[in-house]
Length: 296
Image 1 (tube, rainbow, N blue to C red):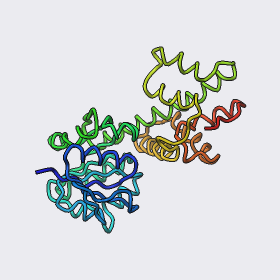
Image 2 (image 1 turned 30 degrees about the vertical axis):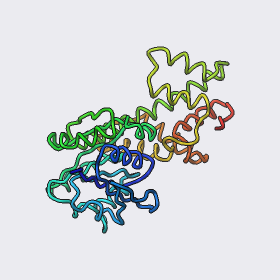
Image 3 (image 1 turned 135 degrees about the horizontal axis):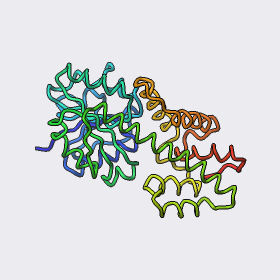
Image 4 (image 1 turned 45 degrees about the horizontal axis):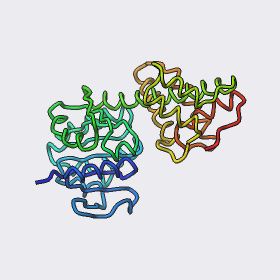
């Protein structure tokens, strides 16, 4: 008999993961805050509340925008936590704070259910191909029990010691990407002022030890001024960098580059770029260098 997964949150990433799980033969109960994102089909049941979706399901997956959404769906009036069966597993794929990851672990333990931090690395197009990376943290036996789900949505499941570590690792990865975008913005502006075309700079550096998938992907976007449609919106990038800074405060770990990127993201949003891809962060150092802003 097919395993049932309650999947909560049908944004671009959520819909892609649901499709992959369907293809792998899972039975899906889905819920989304905004109705109409999907319709019932064989193997897919649309539910009216998170509680309805989770009742009796051995696995619950959340793919939600922020801490507030995860807390409301998990602990709110129609939240699913109290409806979970003993031993059931909550797989949290959202990018959330260090502190909420701790709270989720504690609340599930008290309920005799399990929380596995399972944030994903990759954009929606990678999710559609099942090529995400999952950072899976929690009780080792429960992580192993969840492996067939990870296999359906990802090429790799990388195991962390705890759910908290998995979520913090995702935040760190996003900070590295944001810092890379900032550096690309500054260096392409410098090169352009000297007469080096951004496309040529990215091509030359991409052939050296500096090159990486992150460098190439965002470097190409910046060089071509392809900020729309957004693969990952700038306003969501600001949320993640803010979460990293909060973790730094809690752990007394200074993050001066993160603070700079945070301020530049706020400036970019104030100038109307919130809905653009977060590579639009590169517009800020360009303007500071006296170059005309790139237009997508």
